[in-house]
Image (cartoon, rainbow, N blue to C red; front, side, top):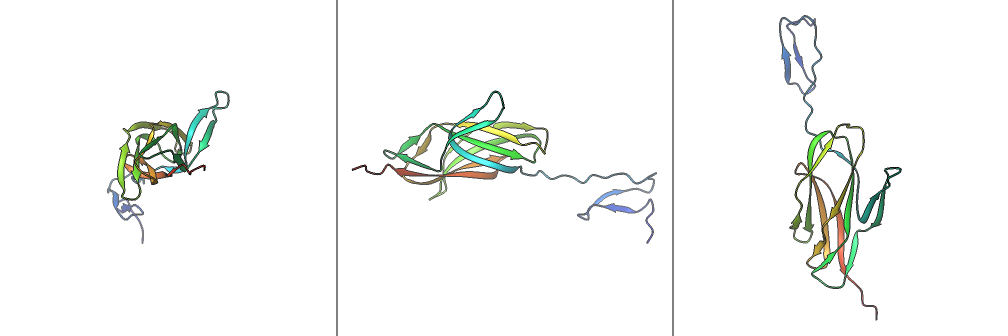
Length: 166
């Protein structure tokens, strides 16, 4: 079968992209790129994150997935979260939601933080200092990370009572 200028060009999805009988030559047609979530390279919950002025490297101190408190309800602080994202570009919003896992109740939510990135191939390091984490009772909790309101990952933490030292 011979293709001519009146042929219908189709994308790999089978949708009609271009139909014309007066195309002087075939044109490059770029299919729409859907809004893709970033690739999450790392999510680390910790006490502090420092950026070395000389090297630009992040120093992550006091990683944890378990906290011990004297009593409940109780608070844990300081807390920070390190995110390393890649394969995204443009302007987006990052938000956090603190959830008790036993009943999926949202205990706290952050406002949105603007995130802008130009190079899909370059990694983007994000550092967020968190407010005190409020634990109403012992149990398992998660800090969900939302990218343009879509979940992209989470950091789990278990809250325990400090064991008796007697």
